[in-house]
Structure formats: structure tokens, C-alpha cells
Length: 259
Length: 273
Image (cartoon, chains in turn yellow, cyan):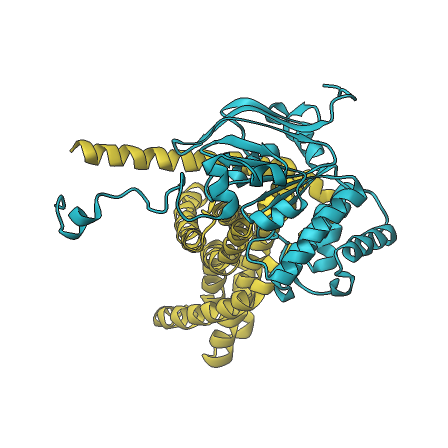
């Protein structure tokens, strides 16, 4: 019993220590971000690595998710003779929920894991220590640009995911199943609200981008400098990001759309 | 603290105690490194030689005692003052620690671009001069993954001297090198020290190579300096520790066997659960 309590206490202390380290780490990154203003090239390079290189998976997934929504939505709506509302169903599902959430999960798997592995390996090969000894702060030079790039790229990727998904729903609904073209777009235009739906979706994707990138860079920076350590950190990035995104999605949805 | 011009000690390590994970590594370490010298810190593996370099570079703080570099106590410096001091130090890591996403040229240019406002033309000239000094001007377009271990260490050396430091710390520079690379590195360290007016601290357990170029040698065993002096003085030392280390004898004060119960009892399985 005592041993069990000891283990529980140790685990709890470990969790709080990591949380503390993670927050201090975040404050130090944020404090160093202004230095990036004078060196935009560092940010552009990372935007390419984190954002542009994630485009393929985002576009292809968005297309398929939109097509599935079109198919499933049509099959349900047609029973009620409401298939002309397909555009609204597809757009609202994507803009409010699936766009930010699925894009964030894909982002954590594609870009987050790459960030953790890259930073963890830089630590394991003494590149970060080498920078410290060259009087260059790795938090400003390595972590800051990656964090900011993830934060900027994620909402853009979610927007692209939603836009491509709407076209996926359009191809299936209008192109294959014969929903009226004008009704598809006009109902979407009438029922999707810029503030209520689009802005709230954007807020979600900004929050998810912040949290997923923070987890990814922290796990890399905090990884034990061994092959096993980096491997575990990469796994933790994907698992923790996915849980954080899904948990935060519920909280944000409750705050935004709850009565 | 202003530097006393009569004092030619660049680094003073005074009564340093340091423990990691409850295991004492240094217990009252004292040593002095004078300007312009090539100083070797030697000792068996696991005696904390690399830890000493990290203490000098301010990456670790001693539990007690003090380390003074160029008149400044390292552990008391704030982050920006510590970084200012590090700009005057070059460190050659055991792995080279080259930035793997930059080529050889950009690796050597890295500290210049970070810490100076020099034009790209000037940086190019400086980088080519540093690469020429280590014989790798022709390799400037290669990526770190295309370099042999010896070449990577020479590039790291060119980077370490890019800002014309006062002090270069070498962490096991000869480990894993073939005889040719080793000979090149040995000569380079000595030549650069004399040509650039550096002070060099080499942490190593490669006795012959290090002794060949070191002006002063400190032998660390059990967390403290047990002998110091020139290579000749240490070779003639009567201390069994130093003799075992300098001659590479397998058994002596540092035992060949890890502590274990009596072999007869162990083979018969006595005392096991």
C-alpha cells in the first residue's frame, strides 16, 4: 500500500514538474519571438517545412472527408426531401468541427511528430548544446521559428481543409447524385454565418495550432538525448496532441455553441 | 572584476565540488590554466573530464567552490554576461555537433552571422581563411553527412575558432580517429594555439597524442587532481595512479575487475537467492 502511494506521489510530482517546465519553456519562447522580426528568413523556412509540406495530406484528406460528408448527408437528407440542404450540412460540419479538428490531428501526425523528432535529434547530437556554447540561444534560433510557424500554419491548413472538403461534398452531391447546383451554394450562403460559424472555427484552429505546436516543440526539447528517448517523445507528441485537441474541442464547442 | 595584468591565469578552478544524481564527481578540484598554454586534462573514463568542460563553459554550476574564467566567476554570471563570455570561447564537441541542415561553409559562418554585423563578402573571406587553416577550403559545399569523422571534427574546429576566441575547449578530440586524422588534429591544435595566441584545454584519455602537444598535464582520479606537470615529469612520476594511466597498465590502483564476490563462491552459486 505504501509503495503504491509512493509510486502515485512520484508520478503526480513528475506530471506537475513537466507541466511547470513546459510553461516556463513557453514563456521563454514567447519572450524571444520579437527577435524573429529581424530575421524573417528563419520563419519562412519553417513555414515551408511545417505548412507547405503538410499541404498534400491536408488537401487529400479534406477532399475525401468532404466526399464522405456529401454521400452520407445526401442519404439521410433525401429521405426527408431535404437534399438541397446538403451544402449547409457539408459546410457547417467542416467549418465548425471537422476542419479544425481533423486538420489538427493530421497536423500533429505529420508536422508535430517531425518537429519533435528533429529537435530531439538535434539535442541528442549535441547541436543544441553546441549552439548554447556558441552563445546562441536555441530557444530563439531553433524553437521560436518552429513554434511560430506551426501557430501560423495550422489555421491556414484548417481553412484549406474545409474549403477543399466543401468542393469534395459538391463533387459527390451535385456532380454524382444530382443535387441542384444553385440550391447547394445558395443555401450554404444563407445558413452559414460568418461570425457564428466561420470565426468560431478559426478560433478553434488557432487554439489547436498553438497547443499542438507547443506540445511538439516541448517534447522534442525535453526528450532524453537517446534513440529511445526521441522515439518515446515523438509518440507522446502525437498522443498528447490528439487528446488535447479533442478535449479542447469539446470545451470550446461548449463555450461557443452551448446555451 | 578587472583582470590583474600580472596574473596570467586564464582559468582558475578552486575547490570545486560537484555531484550528479547523488554520485560525487568532483570533491575539491583545484587547477589553474595559464594563458597561451596547451593544457591537457587526463584521467580514466568516467572521471568527469567532460563535466569539467561544461562547468568551465557555464552549462553546469558547481555545488561548491568557484570557477573563474578571464577574471569572471562563471556561476555568478547572468545569461547575457555568460553568453558574452562564451563568445570568447570555442568548444570542440566530441561529436563535432555540426548543424546538420547547414553545409560546411554555413556551419563555419554560423557564429559570425549570429554575433557580428559583417557583410557577406567579409564573412566569406573569413570562413574561407578558417577552412584553409584546417585544410578543408575545398569541402565548403559538402553537407555534414558527407564528411568523415575526422573532417567533421576539423570543420567543427574551424567553427570553434571563427570568432577568434581567447580559449578553445576540446572534448576528446582524438576519440575514434584513424592515425592520419589523429596526426592532423594533433598538429592543428598545437599550430592554431601558437599562431592565434589561444589557450587550449584538451580533455582526453589518449595519452601519447595529448602528451605530445600539451605544455601542462593534469591527471584527475577520484574527483581531484592527483598529479600535474609536464609530460616528462608525469612519465617519471612515482605515483602508482599516474604510472598506471601513463603506461596504460590494465591493473593497478584502478582495478581491472569491477567489484564482485569471490569467484569460487560465485561459480558454485553460493550466496545466490
